[in-house]
Image 1 (tube, one colour):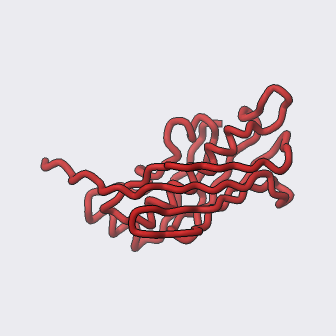
Image 2 (tube, rainbow, N blue to C red):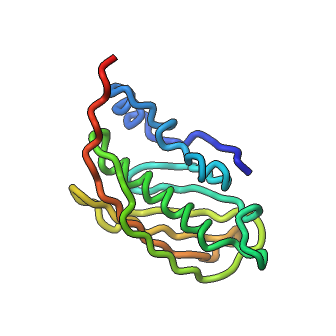
Length: 156
């Protein structure tokens, strides 16, 4: 746990952000909480974000995947999609997260796939389906992010 891979992005998106002085893969790394929980972002675009998280180390007292861990995975993936939708001039702030837990998982990896429900000028909403290694749905989440204007980069 705690290992991290660099998320994958289409090269044209990496180039667009790099021209503005933004290291997109570093910006969208899972972050400290995600790293501690073993979240890995495997694929990222405004249309689809995919990531995984181990069950081990992220369980509640009964040995099942903690619902809060599913929420962290969901918010991470939905936030990445929202930021990519907003583009380099905006940043995403989660304002509503809803998670419905369908079944327990005791081991292995869970995979989350975030797809847009709404992509507007000031908000973005993503549905995140989290499945176990057999493809059975563990959790369905919905995240809405407010898209805020990014602060101007500081002059060097």
